[in-house]
Length: 161
Ligand SMILES: Nc1nc2c(c(=O)[nH]1)N[C@H]1C(S)=C(S)[C@@H](COP(=O)(O)O)O[C@H]1N2
Ligand SMILES: [Mo]
Image (cartoon, rainbow, N blue to C red; front, side, top):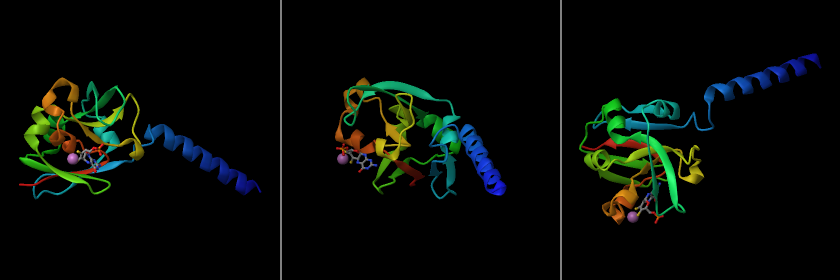
């Protein structure tokens, strides 16, 4: 009997410690990045969250009204992980994929979002990682090409050339 209670207490402690260290429910979420022909690097939610962040407010075709998006600017992401390819393939958990010129992501100020309205996003909420452009800032971004670049549930980003 004693033994069972001790084990139970230890398990409780383990859960509490794990929660306080991990910070959020998506801390263990991963994505892989690779430059053309390079070794894929596994990046965790916390790795991304520890990089300098960018935020903006915009409406999207998939949300009601204007939302706040927080994420990593692609200039920061690519420079941090040495992605030099001209074109990248962005792959989603549902195996949707699209080829995007790296300069579009860099110059049009797309961010790899990991928080929407100050909260992490579940897979059902298009998370944990979502490519978002500042659509409201330029009508150029309000086209099917940019919608197709707006991959949610991102699993990997790979250089293609
Ligand atoms: N994960 C994921 N992201 C995605 C897609 C998808 O199928 N899966 N479709 C893309 C394409 S081609 C477009 S046009 C828009 C489609 O958005 P809609 O399904 O709301 O029309 O999302 C883009 N992002
Ligand atoms: Mo599309």
